[in-house]
Image 1 (tube, rainbow, N blue to C red):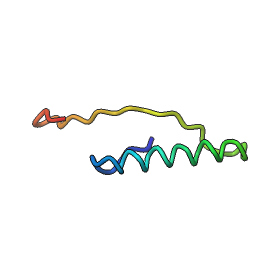
Image 2: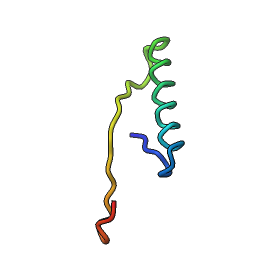
Image 3: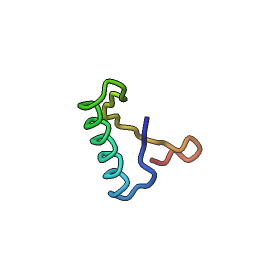
Image 4: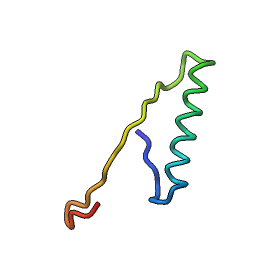
Amino acid sequence: MVTQCNKRRNGETWVLQERAIYQSYNVVSDFSCRVRPLSITYIDSESERW
């Protein structure tokens, strides 16, 4: 599982680019990770902030 490191838009862009690289590698290799998108919402358990 890979998650973005920051809340800025470019953090999500990096995750999407990494996914595209894995998918490209799947085409040329049988020894590659099969990736799927995953949406995660983090909640601070002490302050219940999103």
